Amino acid sequence: MTLLPWFVAWLCDLVIGDPPRWPHPVRWIGALISVVQRAIRRVCVSERGLFIGGGVLWLVVVGVTWATAWGVLTLAWRIHPWFGVVVEVWMIFTTLAGRCLGDAAREVEQALRGGSLTESRQKLAWIVGRDTAALEKPQITRAVVETVAENSVDGVIAPLFFLMLGGAPLAMAYKAVNTLDSMVGYKNEQYRAIGCVSARLDDVANFIPARLSWLLLSVAAALSGFDARRALRTGWRDRRQHSSPNCAWPEATVAGALGIRLGGPNDYFGERVEKPWIGEATREVEIADIPRAVRLMMVAAGLALALFAALRWGLAGG
Image: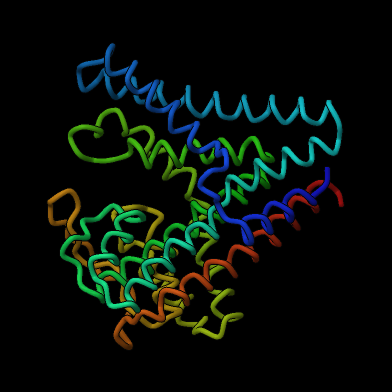
């Protein structure tokens, strides 16, 4: 077992990101979710039936994703070791989203610096689930920082964690879990029943990575010149200030590192959702907090890679 594909894949994500015209397994996973979901809805009509169907949806999508990734990778290694390395690098690369998330955040930042609230709101809507049409500059900035902080877990830290546990196939399976939650894991009437299993199991999958993010982002704060002590303190104190069991860990840690306040009430699908505030407002949030949050995420990603690679190397006996 070699760790070379891990580092090459991470560097590819850092440099290349997610070119829109390149083939990407997450798009294929999304297509599979749509097909299976339609089939289940044709058969299951009651709330109980949709709940059971949601469990079947999860098993089929995650199972097919893992089996396909394992089969393709095994075949590639049997064809030629170097071909196996290339395929493994590509698989791992597609599970990482650090550069892509950073680029999306910077696009909103550029629109804000250019003074266009309309463009800022439009670009923000690409990366958040809340309603953006009436948001002002501080709210937009806060939303971007929250998104970068939260997605540092499922975009980088969690894929690397599952890569350590089970290689590229398990990392791909995690992306299927995460994509299921993104597509059906909502609490509204349309998805509440069929998406319940996907939402709960996404919480389970991110349980350990989210808590590791508290430590990784705090160390990243120290390395980046931010307040690591406050990051640790705020991350621990406000870890439960969210309806999700996982989201507040990275958000509170980033809020503490930067000395700003995140969270608060937001509108989702036309409905007001009251959320508690996270962090302490030692100053007003500013546009420069967006690149600061991106820097924290990328440094934490590098720390996660080093940590999990070292653990995998140690578990494999060196």
